[in-house]
Amino acid sequence: MVTPEHPSSDLPDVDQALGELSRRSGRAFASLLVRIVAIGVLNVLMVRAVPALRSARPIMDVIGAALAVWPYFTALGRAYAWRIALGRAYVRAMWWPEAQRTLAPLRHPRVRLLFDASGEGIYLLALTQRALGATEEAERLFSVLSREGRGKWSAEAQQALAVESDAARRYAESGRSKSGRKGRK
Image (tube, rainbow, N blue to C red):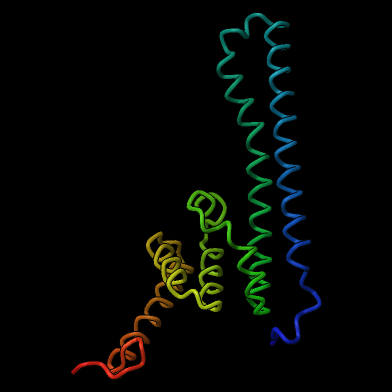
């Protein structure tokens, strides 16, 4: 097993990896702008060349918009899939700060719903938060994931919450408060 003292040489540096993901997202956006302009110009030229298409202009605009936006969201989806795969590799290697930086954008609900359909990314982020000592944030993320009902990862989150609550119950039953002093009986 890979430990923090003996990091895997296969894993990229987090700054390089996130920089490459940012460049890919930037290229996807630039490509979106080019497609929008090209499709707009094509629509105008088609309507001028074939006047009968004027009545179909709204349909052509919708089709053009779909053709422009679809590849953009596909490219973003790929970038987030790579982000989750990179986060998974950092979690397996126990590179917690790198995993946190990589998976942090998945905290946002829209990003989660669009690009983390299985819930694996938010689960990995919750594990990372727990490993870094941010147990309240980890518990919140596990709760969100278990409420969203995303199959395997929601079940894993429910199990993680059950383990945490069982540990808290055993701690409370031991007669100690959070300060470490004996509690009242």
